[in-house]
Length: 169
Image (cartoon, rainbow, N blue to C red; front, side, top):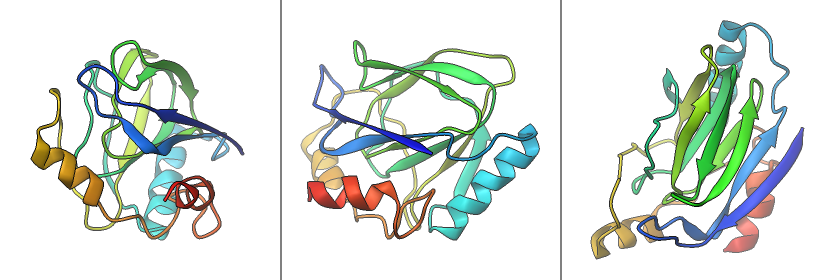
């Protein structure tokens, strides 16, 4: 597994997260069939306290979540994503990759293969929302107060989240 990190400053109407970096796990899992890879991501997420809540694609419009951190496991296909809101960073992902987005991080799909499938998970007790406008003061406070996840969704207690996020606190 290879890890890439991106610290995304506030940009335009998207708050991003100036403290916690986005973590991209290249080849987090060895891709198998779509169902096997999706199930493997669901199992890993659940084992590490990030239960999966959906299987689908990624919205084709810019948005962020103010109530949860999010992990996206790419179960099948490939996509070109925009991270950080309009004019942000383009990232290509493919089956077996995973992407950890701290609360406030803008993201959308620019294009994807027909077979693109993602498993989405969130830390225990966190439920996702969809935000498409600049955050008000209440949303900013909510994001700043969001509890720190107990462990990395891919690698558990010794994963990159602990190295890159705990260092930022």
